[in-house]
Amino acid sequence: MVSCASLGEFEQARPIIEALKKKHRHYKILVTFFSPSGYEVRKNYNLADVVCYLPLDSALNARKFVAAVNPTLAIFIKYEFWPNLLNELQKKEIKTILVSGILRKNQLFFKSYGGFMKKSLKAFHHFFVQDNNSKQLLNSINFTNVTVAGDTRFDRVLEILEQDNSLDFINEFKDNTYTIVAGSTWAEDEVLLVDYINNEALVGEKLIIAPHNIKPATILEMKKSINKKTLLYSEFKQLSLRGT
Image (cartoon, rainbow, N blue to C red; front, side):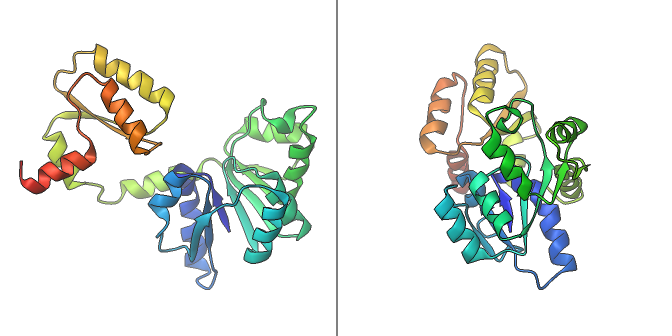
């Protein structure tokens, strides 16, 4: 079982999934997502036997989910901390690890009133974290089963760089023009991007924005806020099909 919040966390999990499948071909792999932006893109991922949403984290849902899945190993990516699910995994003595974990001082684990969340961390047999700060924070609440192992996303990026990543529609859109790409943007990012687009003389450059939130209403709202010429991917695709 591999638990990812969204698409970015899936990319961090992917090198691990591929290594597991290569070494243990008989393993069945379940990938769970919390966000539609991850599930909708990777619901047909060929190395996973099952891809599904993670149920809301209640005690009852956790019991039912763990009973149905009965995993041998549970892998949580980056900052997937679901206390009821973790507590259930611990009760069932299921080996559980955190990969590419990153922790910050303002999280509940490190507050005097965060006992419930802190207790759930006992489910982890080992923490593989991104940096020394995360390790020191875990050490400060008496967790010593911690290794600084970096970010698996870099493994994935290196792998992607070795592939042919050219896309015909991107090349067509760029048309040999300098192009800035902003990927998986959040609302706060988009405010800055829109401000840049509207207030700068964009001479000789184009921008491609791929929002994290792909709800049509949100995308249309952003499009309306831009006072330069804009084109949705769906509109560009239609123009390409017409040969215009």
